[in-house]
Length: 594
Image 1 (tube, rainbow, N blue to C red):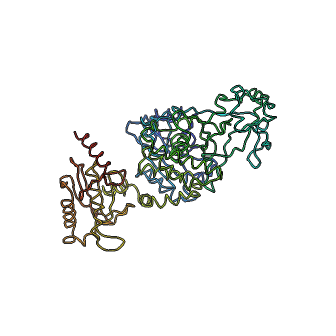
Image 2 (tube, rainbow, N blue to C red):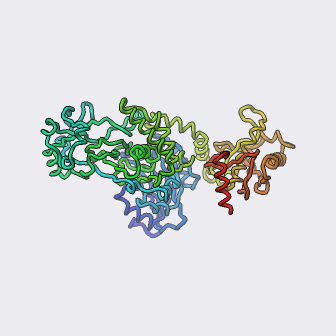
Image 3 (spheres, rainbow, N blue to C red):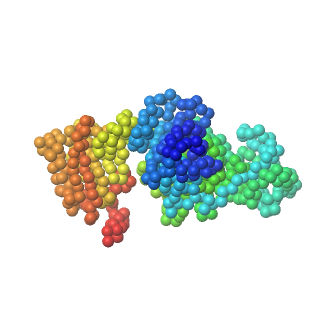
């Protein structure tokens, strides 16, 4: 960069590790302060036949403006030799197209200044909304509510470590009769825990359990989380401990023999977490000691997909997740008001641990983990779009694991309309989607203030008129009126395909757009109380694919009822309010309008 003249442009192919690892923070600081970054793109390794993940960085040697946006692309999972998918993505990026996220590729547009709002200055490739969550007042880094400590490093494992028969590693096989019982470990004095014990005190026994972690079984969809059978042991005789001290391997000894959560921070599927053995822990299975959270609650949150996303996407995306990554994990500051969710989370974790006592490879991912993930999403206040981001990322990052867990199939079915919209966006260049305001909206996709309706009353399944279907559109209008307003596009499918309103025109006066508008206004006037027509604009757009009706809704200054019911927006959907929820919402709305 020193050789680049002011205003010069650099496009550089480099290993992707620089984006998040701590050692490269000074480089990231310099890039943020002195250059305008255009693109940060992680590419498939097969393009350059590289043994490391490759990244393209494009920048100008010009200090960035306050409103400059960079484009970040995750293209690593594009299948080998699928040059069309790669080319379509690169064309979309170069043309500043709409952001898309799928199980294979993703791109994001966000302000360059956003990177500096987090201490690590990660050039993240992920959701800017979830990045902002890490700086929310409701969130604190894990090290504010816990102590995170490296474990012992002997420097000569074969001299001090033993393993169970069948366990990994080139260590001597342990004689299990030489391992202290849980009761004997509990009765160790403070001095013995720090400096080792005399074996003769325990009939010659000299071994205690050692937390070391375990390999994932990706083909089975299993990760070593929650609880493990101890397979490793360490010689904790006084003579052995003295030797370890001479090798300067006794790290954080005051934390040995304490209950906590051990974590493995090396390997493709790291970090993984489980309750420790309350004995000695190895550096490869270092420990978290929580202050204001139960072990069960901590395990549930840490083992959920969202914290995996935060660790690998926003903090440190490389293969290993060092201890600084764990310390930076975002956790909810106050769980007191979320006690029912926490209680259920703890019960699910306890059930997994109970099942693992009978079957160490219990497939929790097919059972309790599904609800655990849902509860964690609620604890962090994630909406439908945030959840979709996490689950699509998980499928991109761990395709083999997601396939084995059944998540890949679930995600493809659950987000079929979204994935089809993304596919459709890539079919046409960005200039096409910018050519018409309606196409721009379609490309952006449904949101809190935008919804697609394929028809008003035409039943696409039964190929006939169905007057009951119009309530779906009316509900959305009512919800927009009672919220911040929004836009409905009638004649556009959930996947963003323009279908047009011609099929509905056969049921309106003169089979015309005027007849369609008149019918829609009549429905609104007859079924809403009070009539909100002054807050609604109806227009039409003629596209090659068909005519689209655009309904723009402004927020009403009073509560609007549809068929004596109240609807509001809930994320990207519409929800009916009743009972206590309705009363609370009315009170809140009254306070806001005073």
